[in-house]
Image (tube, rainbow, N blue to C red; front, side, top):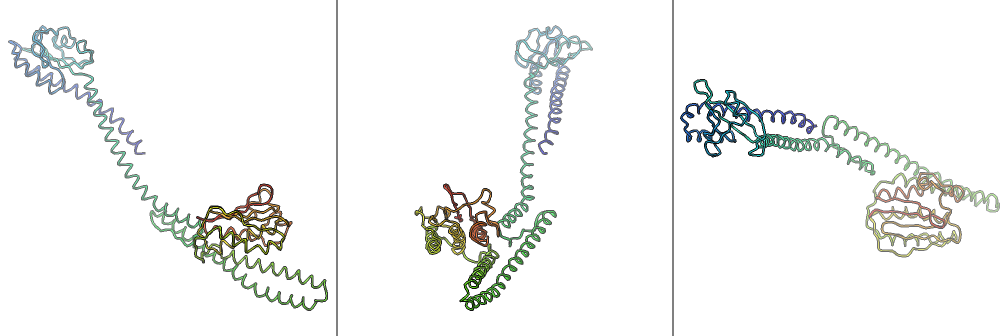
Length: 442
């Protein structure tokens, strides 16, 4: 906008300045010619060459051109450039016009100089009759240079104004944008899970209103999330007592009907459902606390984590008829995370791999620069299920047709890793099976 304003003002100003400089040059030439003509009226007859030459030179310095004085026949009497006296200028159109009693100002090409000139002539009167003439010649190129210099001065002034405007505009824009940037930073922290952040209330009235609304929104989300977490945690704790009581009653029934195989089988099935429900309650409690950094992070050796997981699940793998092996050691790698969170996420992935792997197959646990991999030869996932299985209580097609589960393990694994800047991904494995990658922050 400032540039457009400068152009809108500068172009007319430059054109006006061009006309003004041109008019001033012409007016000054006419004025000087009139002055010299008036002063030379008493110096022509008899001709006083020395005085006329000094007068011509003084006038030439004022107009930055050449000044000559001629007699009634057009012969040179004085020349600011020093040309010898007696040279005839009667053939010059401006001189002829002045000797006829009419001053003239024209622009023409000079054959002598080979350039365009501005010629101004004025008659020298004595007793009302022309007795000579004064001619002033100026280079049109010099006049144009003066005009260009003036225009360049205007352009330079406009550039300075534009630069100052840009600096001032940048300062004002930075002042206006600073609250927006801080609000954006606060929003990014909230998006990253930090619901305790509050935006600084500053800036214009609209910006302050936006910051207050943002703080009210995050506060409400924080309260709602806390209520939800408290509800899940309280429900999980409250369910433990009746589940424990129900388990004790089923154990007592199992002892009572020890001699009745069909009854014992039903009691054992009920016990399995109780165990499954207890496991689900525990996982709901874990999910309700996900995102709370109640455990300090530390640098952990990913190779050591993979080895411990292999040892921890070896007995379970043997019970499922699956061989569990540790992948070949890669380069040493560390990550910043709470070890219990990483172990819990890795356990959920390993447990799924063992449950879905066919007997006689191999599950491999290895590590990379910033991740731990679990490879299996199970049924894998149907196309499009790579992200769906991370939803709570959502199981893939293989899970619905396979072993029972809560549908919370992968959701827990992802929550545990994401709160430390990591993630969990599932990818089809070449040759069949699944590649589960537990990524961790550096």
